[in-house]
Image 1 (cartoon, helix red, strand yellow):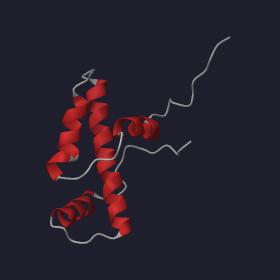
Image 2: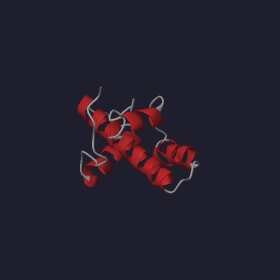
Image 3: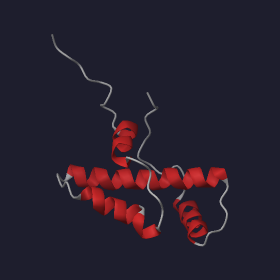
Image 4: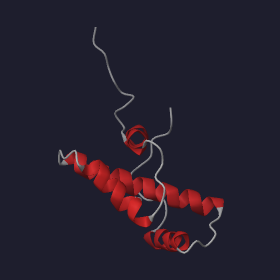
Length: 99
C-alpha cells in the first residue's frame, strides 16, 4: 500500500503561487517543479472534498474539480476522488472483522 500523507502543502504558499504563474504563462517547469505543483493541487483538491464531506454535501466533487483544476486550465488526474481516499484516509487499512 501507498504511504499515507498529511493534508498539508509540501511547499510554501509563495512557491505554490510562483509555480502556478509559471504554468499559467507556459514557462518551462522542471520535473521537480511539475511534481511539486501537481502534489500541491492534489492536496488542495482533497482538502476541498474533505470540507464538503464533513458538511454532508455530495455536490463537492464538481465544485472542487472546477475550483482547483478547471479554472486554472490544468488537466486533472484520473479518478482523483479514489486517490484522495487512498492517500489521505488513515482508517482504510484498519478494518477489523469480528467472528
